[in-house]
Length: 250
Image (cartoon, rainbow, N blue to C red):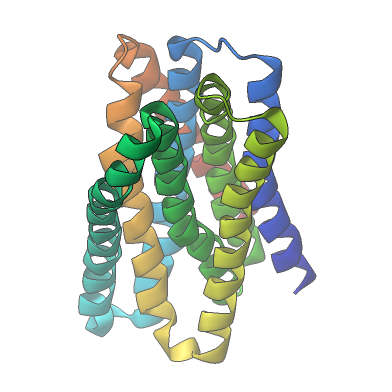
């Protein structure tokens, strides 16, 4: 349980750490953030495959292959449905925006809300990793998610400050997005602890959410500013680093 608590704090704290960097270096180049985010994508890709999807197959066996495949797709679909919620919220908040003339602030808060929403399944993925009983593997998964949270925390600071949010409120909001991940970690851990039978599906579900985030958000973002070559190699380095660590620690 102590390991789960430390992991939850580490995963959530990575967002806060990234936010602190965002305060120190307000003008972070797209190239730098793309390289860091691509490296994190590679780490997460490796963690999703070796730490979640393969263990799902091992625990479920070949007769439970359907659970693994289904879990991957259901995890991705759940995040896809979550994405559909964002434009809906935008319409709801748009009316309020016109009344108060705070269009920029509304967009920034919506952006932060989207990050917070996506942090929940990432936290669940970190917690589910401990359900397999392989703590080394679970730490690798959590490490990959934490790496991704650092640049995420970095990029939310400047837009909020530019929109007129005070430094204290900006840091507090960044902390809340990290707290969502802490909550998700415990949800994932207790879910598989209470019902061990759902472990193969839960592992695949968590893997599917991570694959969705990597493909739908991280890779397109890192290839949108002219740094795609460096971003590609950074992804490969992150993937191979996790591969080596998995073999060494395994």
